[in-house]
Structure formats: C-alpha cells, structure tokens
Image 1: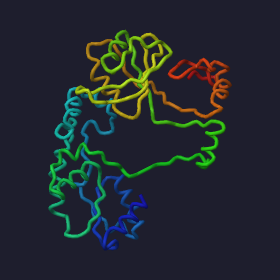
Image 2 (image 1 turned 135 degrees about the vertical axis):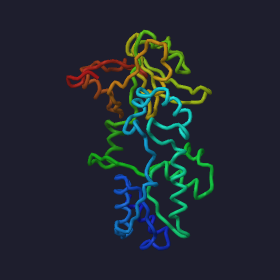
Image 3 (image 1 turned 90 degrees about the vertical axis):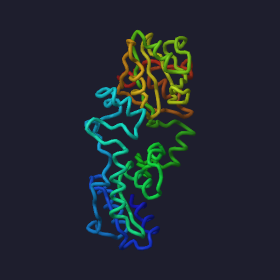
Image 4 (image 1 turned 120 degrees about the vertical axis):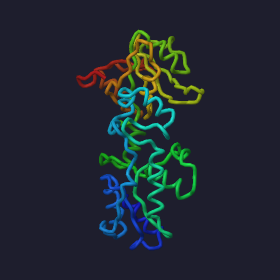
Length: 301
C-alpha cells in the first residue's frame, strides 16, 4: 500500500495539495493513512463521505456465500442470476450504489487531479459515472485489489528451490475439499460433472469439470471416492459448495465443508519421506490419483 502511495504521488501534478477523498469505513481509513504517509500528507487533509461506502449487505453482512444461500435460498439464487439488481434482505443492490456515486461525483469532483480511496463497488460505479459508461457490465469485470500478502518462513527462495530439486518441500496450497455424501451422491455427481462418476473406484480420484447451465466451465478439480457413497471434491477457491446446494433438491445428499485443507509435498525424496511418515503404508504401489487414510504422527490424514 505504501508503494501505491508513492506511485500516486508520482502520477499527480500536485501531491502536496491534491484532494483526497475516502470512505469513512475503517479498512479504507487505514489504507488512506498509509497512502498519506507515503505522500507526506497529513490525514487531517482527507475528506470523508458516506456516499463512498461499500454496498450495504443487509442481513448478509459478514456471511459466507454458503451461509447466505442457506439463510435465504430463493433470494440468493436470484442474486446469483442478477447481482446488479437483486439485494440482500435489508441491504442495497449494486444498482442502488450508482445514484450515490453519481451524486458524490456531481458535488465533489474537481476539474483537476483527485485521489479517491473507496471499495470495489463504489469504485466501479464512479468509473461508470466519470467515463459515461453503462454501469452494469462493470460489475462483472475482474478487478484486482493490487495487494499481495507474502508469508515467509525465513528460508530464501534459492534454498527452497534447491530443497525441491535435491530433497522435498511442503507447500500450503489454496485448494480445499468439499464433502458430498449420501445414498444419492453418485447420481447427484453424475448430474453435476461432465465425467462418468459411477465407474470411479473407492480410493481413487479423477479430474472432473462442473459445467454451467449453458455448457460453460464453472469449476475444475479432482473428485475422490473415499467410500461407496462418500466423496471429496478438491477444488480451487470458488463458490462450488453453493452451486452444489442449489442443485441437490429432491436428492438424499449432504454437502458440507469437512474442515480440512490440502498440503502439497513434492520433491525427489518424497517417496522415502512419505514411507517413513506413514510406517510404510505409502509405497510404490500408491500411484497417481490414489487416495486413502493414513496415520501420520498419531493423526489420521
């Protein structure tokens, strides 16, 4: 964020006096303070306006996508179909943000440079106002937060590289499992994925793609059959759990978060390491797309 402040200072013609506007919410105030420090500005010069606040999520405030779907299924399904116009109960829709962005711009925008520190939806609406664009398509355009959080363990990239080449490393990856179980689990997954599921053996996995209603790709991941009617789908970050819940009507299926996460171990010494960690249970017979339960340090994984 400080680097962004330094970049802003280099872009504007008058960094010492350029107007800075900020949403009054805490997270934007914190970002604004860092930007001001990088620009050599006092936060006392910043002006705040409620019209720059993020879209209000009503009773959904603080809920995950899954929790929203479970609480208000019908509303959430309509919201997924039309995020621009449908709002949470007691909240704002994205289209409601446009008039306040328009009002703020009319009242406050100067003829010259300006810095605005706000949130995803108000920023999109401000772009629409400033550029005289249709606001609806802007909702669906990917917009990065431009922030990267790096968590280090004190090992240099060079040491990690050579450990991978010569021995092995363990990596915390973003993939996570969703658990699907029940008497109708196999039939349900045949409906969800563009891959034959009934032929998948217990203790095996295969790549499976979930498609949208129009045949487009929705999600790709690895489906593991842990038991006859029990599966885990290991997926990248996304709303697959909500998608599954929306399609399970009339079927005896349970969809839930197993509260487990994936770790990746790789390197030329991996076979020896895993054999030692599991008391020989993982050996050369454990092939690609195999799965199973193993005791590692007294804990079943």
